[in-house]
Amino acid sequence: MRIGVLALQGDFAEHIDVLRRLGVDAIEVRLPQHLENLDGLIIPGGESTTIGKMARDFDLMTPLQQFGREHALWGTCAGAIFLSKDAHRPQPLLGLMDIVVERNAFGRQVNSFEVDLSIPALRVVEPEARPYHAVFIRAPLIEKVYGEAHSLAALDNGRVVAAQQGHLLATSFHPELTDDDRFHRYFLHLAAQHSS
Ligand code: GLN
Image (cartoon, rainbow, N blue to C red; front, side):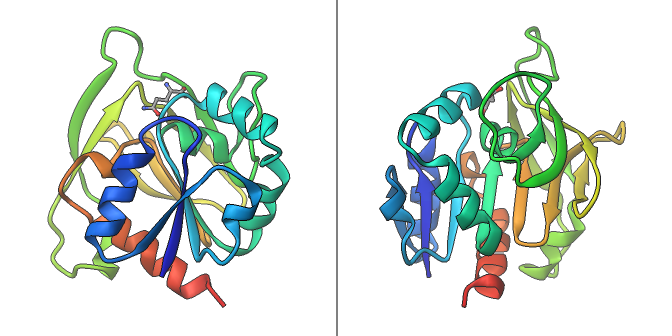
């Protein structure tokens, strides 16, 4: 399995570490040709405006959109914003997922928090249904899930923080910052299903 991590800005190194720990060939993606022969791609957290502008400057927008039509693609936090169709602001978006996001939805006062979530989909990789400890850092909410997308996880107040659309995945939180690698393994499972 060969998985790329978009390495323009943000915490791509942490994703690479988890992938290597899982025995996956992990590749830093900075140029269109780095997408060749990948089974999937992760877009990390960071600053979605910066990631979008850099992707545009490096002529990565169309190659990333084409890649995402056929391959597993997962955006964490800023990466989830970048995958969305609408972030209520003018910024470059891939527009691949039927989700609308609200950036920095938790306000400046409470920039970061951690919470245990119930994520039934993770039983695909581990039958035992233990809570998933999620880390949120200046996180977006997935305000609307429509069309082909569905919710994977929500906070107690019902607000969605993880969504899936076939081989596309979006999480408001940062699975690369904890020791729990179930989300990465879930993504590898999707990538294996969708690689030809
Ligand atoms: N607040 C950032 C944004 O809107 C996302 C933060 C993160 O990726 N941890 O792009």
